[in-house]
Amino acid sequence: MALHRLTNFAVTHAKPRAKAYEVSDVQRGLRLVVHPSGVKSWIVRYRHPVTGKSRKMTMSPGLDLADARKLAADAMYQVAKGIDPVEAKRAERQAALDATEGTLNAVAKRYIDLAASKLRSRGYYESTLRNYILPKLGEHPIDRIKRSEITAVLDAVERKSGASTADAAKRVLNAMLNWHASRTDFVNPMNRMKARLKPSEQARTRVLSDDELRAVWLAAGDERVGPYGQAIRLLILTGARRADVAGLKRSEIEVVRDNGSEFTVWRLPQARSKNKREVVRPLSRAALDIINDMPVISDSDYIFTLNGRSPMNLGYDLKKDLLAEISGVKDWLLHDLRRVHRSLLSRCRVPLEIAERCLGHSQNLLVKTYDQHSHLPAMLEAVEKVASEIARIVAGERGAKVIRMR
Image 1 (tube, rainbow, N blue to C red):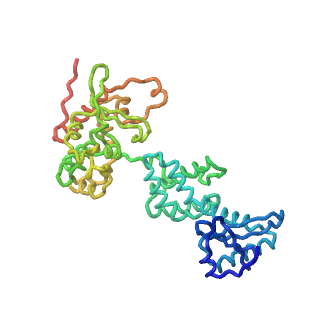
Image 2: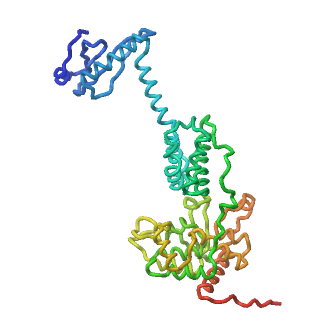
Image 3: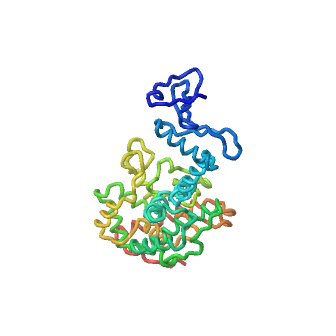
């Protein structure tokens, strides 16, 4: 092929033909390829330094003549040194990919997309990694992260946000590293890393006294609190988790028959359940009144919604703070209401098995396998007892006298 001293003008005005053709430049190995569509590209032709076979290296599109000549000269220099430029380019690209894909940032993204996406708490996992772990360790190659580096990051979290938050960050990171280790040859450096607080020190035991429960219930009916207050009351009446009540849909409320009797139940689907199993709980008359009184917004299936498109955010701090201000009750969390409900079940002398079923707690494998009874009549009786006890507390009535029956 004849050599041509290409110019920018010649490159720009090269005409397409019926078949793609090449124009060689005075720079050794450099070719301008003109396609039938008019698209132009650059290649470098050379012989493999070991096998002697003809090889072709394609350059990135959009190069001008000067850049193409420089890259071609670099490629021919590698050939002269006994290096195949195509193989060198592939190795460089793989090294760059490894540098990116092998970081904690990349593993975290895969973990969130593949594993945590199946969890209801995906947002919590993602925010914990983003806020506490990745800013310090994200760019580190995962196979080089040391236990001491993780400890230093968790120490910083503890100093700023407390030991409980540090332990939460530790659990999330450990879960991610264990997931990565189960798929690769990676060894988790967090193995046997102790928590900063004992489980007994982390468990909350806060419940509301009768006076506090009365104040919160009455404050939840204040018009300034709005529908948020009705959701709070339903939390107290059902003992359900915050996310379950927030996402409650009308389609989840249904009437079922059990041994000839009809029950109105809330059927929490497996996809929304924390323990990944369907939870069916009968609803007291007081709970049904709250649900039936909620207005339908834009034909939405959501019961607690402000726009008809998405569920209400029960974690909205301003509403929670307003409720605390109106009620005068401090230092409590929405999840404490679940503990209040469970304590009221015990006060009403509801058997342990029924009380645990009312809360939707998982049973052990033996019970789940052999006990297929619905327990709906006993559960309905239990939640009605709790509703009556709440009504008594709100009304300010003293405990009824106990009369021994003979």
